[in-house]
Length: 107
Image 1 (tube, rainbow, N blue to C red):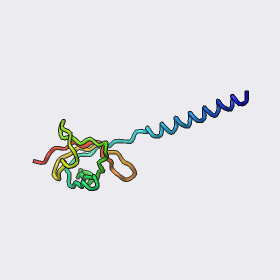
Image 2: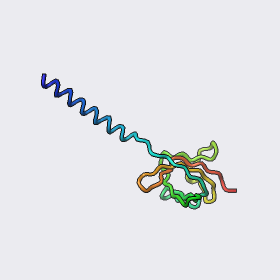
Image 3: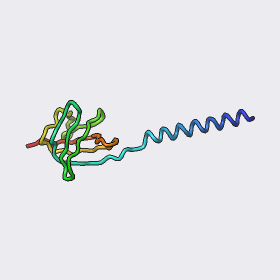
């Protein structure tokens, strides 16, 4: 009987710990928005700089980032200095990680 109770307690602890770990991994990052003008694009470091009313933001473009111009899919190579853009990003430490970028080509 003691073995069964001990096993039940052990299983309960394992599953409760696993639940905490999965909940920590799924905690949503706060996504913020900024818009302005692209002032720099660096394909080597996969970054761009966006000049906003509150100052410049340098964003890293992750593999899962979606870059669009209207309904068309684009890549970082399509982003040019002078383009107007709206960016959704999340903070990872002190880095701005771009989640989506919608560009409007400079005229």
